[in-house]
Length: 92
Image (tube, rainbow, N blue to C red; front, side):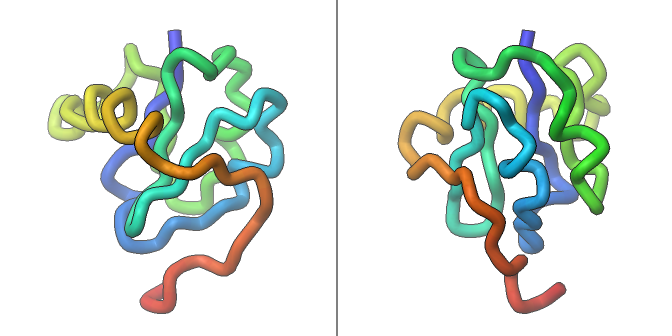
């Protein structure tokens, strides 16, 4: 099982979640973060840290955001790992 970063992260990219991840399974895209499903240990440490409530267990992803399950799996391996907190994107 894994957690998934969904739509609320798009365009804000807060990184509070990455610093609490014990296995460093977050990856940084241009406008959103991704969780690598093969690296996530389902610890849920990231969930309460997300100020925009963008992280869901894959079984609880809202229907309208189901595509993010596949998007995280596809994009995480293509992006750079992120382990340190950064400033969110400028529009927030």
